[in-house]
Amino acid sequence: MKIALGVTGGVAAYKAAELVRRLQQEKLDVQVVMTRSAQEFITPLTFAALTGKKVITEMFSGENSAPANVESAIEHIGVAQRIDLLLVAPATADILAHFANGIADDFLTTLYVATKAPVVLAPAMNVNMWEHPATQENLARLHARGVHVVNPDEGYLACGMTGAGRLAATEAIAKKVFDVLGLRRDLEGRTILVTAGPTREDIDPVRFLTNRSSGKMGYALAEAAIRRGAHVILVSGPTDLPVPEGTDWVPVRTTEEMRTAVLDRSRDANVIIMAAAVSDYRPAASSRQKLKRGENTFTLQLEPTPDILAELGRDKGSRVLVGFAAETEDIAENARRKLTRKGVDMIVANDVTQEGAGFDGNTNIVTLFLRDGREIPLPKLSKFDVANRILDRILEI
Image (tube, rainbow, N blue to C red):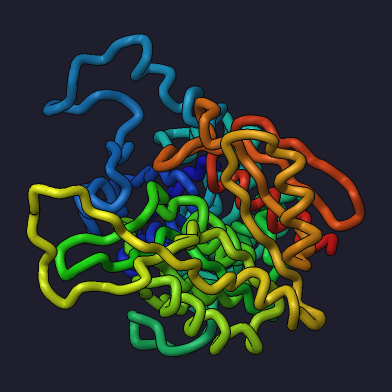
């Protein structure tokens, strides 16, 4: 979802940088628009570095800008049509007056008049300015139009006075944005344990058995669950992925290490999602020294690894248990068999030979097999979208 963040000229303008980061944590695409006064308090370069995109500072091209063209002349219309929400933080008394009276004399005020997206304002100013009848009348007019306002906090102000006028806390502003956008927090109070990535089983100090799992599906599940308010325990085999912020991350290497980590933490979880590609076999004996190449053939004896999912299924209790099945043939038959044999509530199955559903990609094509007999095929989606569809079904369960 796309957010336009308007930054106006107040001492609290520097706090908008923190707000950008908070919005980005929810995967919101932020386009910053600054008034001329805002640039007296914080530079556009700061926001450009945070967002990775041009900061809009002028209605038309300036001296050092590229020549004006049709695209730049109607840029405010393009932004107005693309965004899902306009947020202004801090919003000064001046910008409130412009908005309330429909005065469009720079990019931000013109954007406000041009957009059909919902608007959230977070005022910040001197207490006397906040309490002035003109400001309150402007706020009342904006309220009547459906504009959402995050009232300022009370406390010590930069001007030395004490009272209402401090920019609301970043989390309070972000929460209002999420509420207006309909971003869900429907997993608050729940703990979800997710496993991700491959496991590795040593043959000798330099060789091991593993599989092609990248861990992307498990990490997408962890990130989606965090965004929806859950406390997430992520037990991960070796991957190159960044750890989603806010997770209780438990790195492991072997199947036995994953088993220990999962069983030790399973009692704390309401939901367990076993998305890891756990090795089914390991060498019966691992050499302490590197095995040397020889003239003859070499036989490696394997033994089965612990079946973590089945072990959890035997002692599932009231927890919701979800397993994954990466298959190459007889997808439905194998998934149903696993659903029954493992004692789980849902199996997420996919054909890894299908384009867009295999290892290491950013998309997946899965079918959800539920204990009540339902089969829910999903189209090709990003792994993050697949994760949210899985979480939706878990909430139903």
